[in-house]
Length: 219
Ligand code: SAH
Image (tube, rainbow, N blue to C red; front, side):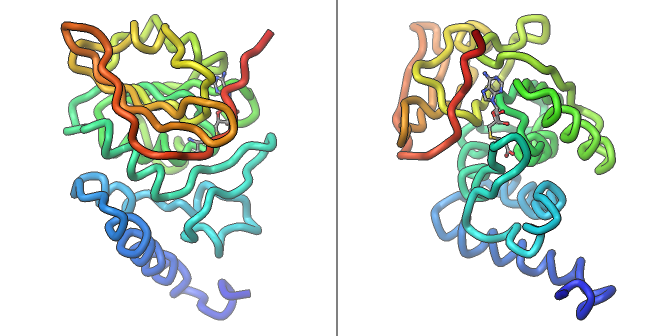
């Protein structure tokens, strides 16, 4: 309906509400990294939601996608991206491709992105979407993200977008020294953790409470 009324101005309208989202939901909550803010502006979240959700794409919520999964809340995508401290030259691993929205933001912030998704249909849809948006620095894999992606390791940064009961040990092993791992840990409401790999081992900081869909442990 609104698309019909606005016609050729529809994209400009979506761009306008995206910038409102950045100001009101992301900057207002303390995300400052200018590269992250620019990436959140560059990536059209409405491109990653189902058609009936396009007008809600810039609201302050996760939204349902296929397979009973969700596209993460924009603020959480921005926060997790900021915690990875990306400068542009990094190789990054994402666990839980889902809609591909966080993947697109990472592809804007880093040199190389690798993303693992358990559900083949979600991985295929995200691959097609991201190719259509001209994103070339991403490789996709279908499988259990708890194993990471050993053939593509080591990584400067790893982000897990589903909740693990415990931090999967493979992920710590696949981090470079100095690398950052951001992962929600727990059942129900989870603890978002920032884990840094130092010469002395893994150093963990608790960031805030979050709610993600669970990391499924395939049998
Ligand atoms: N980053 C995504 C979030 C998707 S929700 C987005 O912004 O759209 C989390 C995703 O993790 C779901 O797609 C789910 O299928 C996937 N997932 C759950 N368990 C997994 C596992 N063991 N390995 C890989 N992906 C998993």
